[in-house]
Length: 403
Image (cartoon, rainbow, N blue to C red):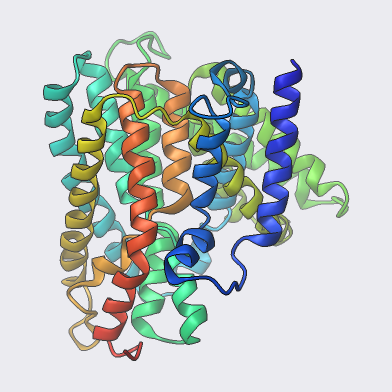
């Protein structure tokens, strides 16, 4: 019990310090600056606190922290979902949304299909676990983070640059594709039907996930739309995220997806969505840092095959983003066609991919799970290191960044 208390306190302190000190202007060498400013150093902090070194966040302690992890995943989902306001999404050119969807789906397929056959050869596991693991790898690959783009935009002061705006748009919405696949993959783990019919069991549970998320969103809307004072808002938000994440945990569903649906529902109903968004914006970094530390602490590299899988996954994701970007460019108007290498500006993977693999780790105890966690975390670190230079290359080609 003492170790759990110390672990929680230490996580909160790290999140608070990281919130105030990370993502700031620091005079560091280029390599160190990329690691520090993207926040990936907190994965290494988690590794140090885990079984590999200090042992403060060992396996038993992490099991005790499962409710805290579910709460963190819930807040990350709510933060993402509240940004999916349809009215704001449709303000951008009509071609942007299909471009974002096409490149995300293409990347997902390019990664998940080969990984399925590779996992079948490398790991002695049941068919269902392999299928779920390959879907999770595809879902995490589809995500794009805005970290590298934010660094470049701040460095060059880019405003109103068409290709940069397109990259930012894609990176802000394409994780929705991965979240849908994550939710469906978690539903595949259910053997019992919801309505007593054995056909389409996973689809039945997926509909339940959608329904729970939408219902929680409508309830949050009712609680905050009228007579909700500013000091009451955090209480309602924490209570609703705790409630919805608890339901997800009890039903072995994805708290990340359910809370995303809750945020999406609130975002598209009139009421306190702007106040909720402003409050959640202040919580984004602490919860992101918390997840990175917890992800590092659960990291067990395991079999050397996992390292090969990570390298293969990294290559497939790069190929998927590049090919998906080229395919997406074809739907753009001919007069404003972006560079064909658009996908190279979408390599940054970031916090949503980490949250997805943490959600998967929480729901699955199959032997292949550790390999999937290793694969995604190594890819996130590598992609955060190479993504700024690749994004600059795309923007130079478009003439928006000078050499």
